[in-house]
Image 1 (spheres, rainbow, N blue to C red):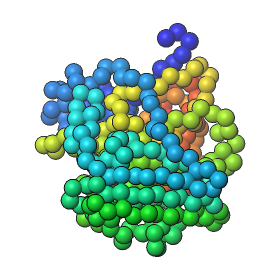
Image 2: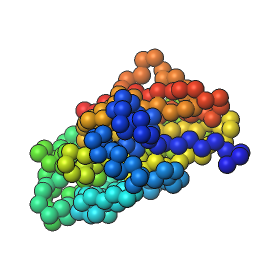
Image 3: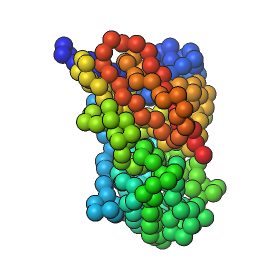
Length: 295
């Protein structure tokens, strides 16, 4: 590749065995067996794919989300997952302020109740909106209607949706039940973003047994990102997992870094569940992002 610069989100032996940091977005936790799986990880990876999208039309986003068990492949690995619509990376929902989200949620899990929570959104917690006390039992359906305020606390940005049925949350999100949610309008706050190529980095981790976890981005291991010299891209990054990572992967809950030139954060930016940053492929220099807080 002579005219493009590939930014590889990968791991190295030092990252796996040193347990000291993370410069990529896919990692196998627990150094004790890291040596045994290094050969199974793709050394170069495939081009980063983007999640499928569902956009609102005429002020309404209509979607159906079905929760069900599925076998989830991650590179050379696989695990028994719990997913939406048969996919480890379900649809990215894109709306605008004043829109209404209408989702028919179907629970086809074998045993547990579930529901939907719209993480970080300033919407009503009552009725059939963002009501975490609604439990949708196996074999049943619930129709959500979430009205997004046109002003006030609800601003544009990257958020995420996931189950919030108390007692079952961690199990279901670890299985794969989480997805991204965008409220449009960031380019109005930061005009520099207008027209930039947009890339999503949805980070998940899964348990492979015996205390081992694997981290992926958009359901991929070690994906490649191509960026032209001098090009600027809009990277939207969210860790959409149930908790901070354990063992050697705990560093991922503090910092993510890469080689590139990033625009600094505003000094008084409030922490949310996601991060967005313009990245330029000019002279390489280290840039660091603080990650998502959860609530």
